[in-house]
Image (cartoon, rainbow, N blue to C red; front, side):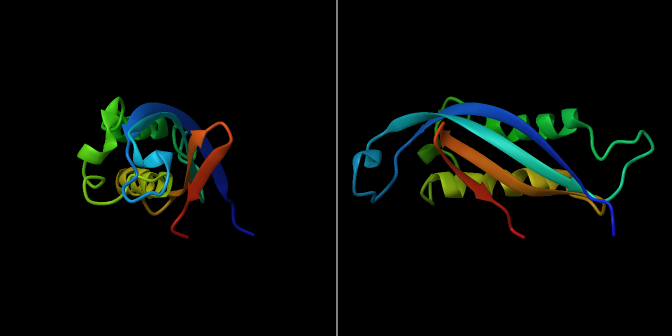
Length: 126
């Protein structure tokens, strides 16, 4: 059996969006205080005994969410072209964080995006 370590950090940001073609109130501009959970898996530890420093995961997550924080998402690529749904946002966050963090030992395994305290989406490409 091989080793597997799963780490999770949380972050948050606030933004507004409009869901294009949505048949309801969300077709009007509205905002959310989003909560982001980033899960990372590692198959081994480094020389310090860490899978990856929590600080590094938080920094990479914040780097991506800072571009969305207190913004109107419909104006920001790729959401100027695709609907800024929670699902599309979760996929975007996952891909942006993974593009910098992933290596042969450590990979982002999932991003969970909470739209409200009672509704979230979890994205993984596995």
